[in-house]
Length: 161
Image 1 (tube, rainbow, N blue to C red):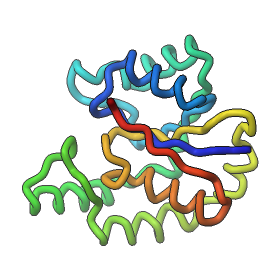
Image 2: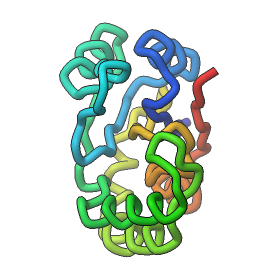
Image 3: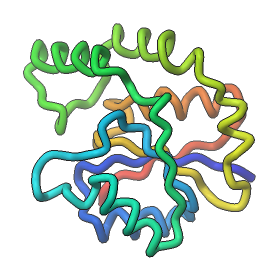
Image 4: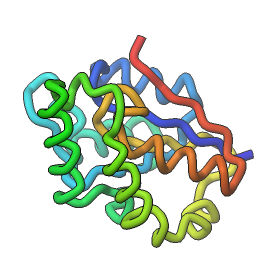
């Protein structure tokens, strides 16, 4: 049976990240980021090339699904809301309602989730990956909710210990 997990970068070390993926039985990681890099040396392990090499060494597949990444305009909309609320990206706990509505309408609705689901491995968990620690603060939770609603795929949110 296919299952979905979500995971972010913040709060993990490279070692902990891979251990959590292994512990959940993740066999494929879908990178939902537009820009596949994270600022700062603490999270350099999550930059695309390094991450892909680490995943390959751990026998975890990798796929960039740029079509599910928010546009620069949508990210800027969320950053303005973060500024209005006085929170930073690394400690955001929720998405702006306008961001959620527009992401759903502009990105998720036109995307062919049926085709994506058909390509997911059936014998392991597929992880939706972005940077935010909390799934409610990231578009990956919107995608996960749709996968559950339309395809009855169970969802687990992987958080740092």
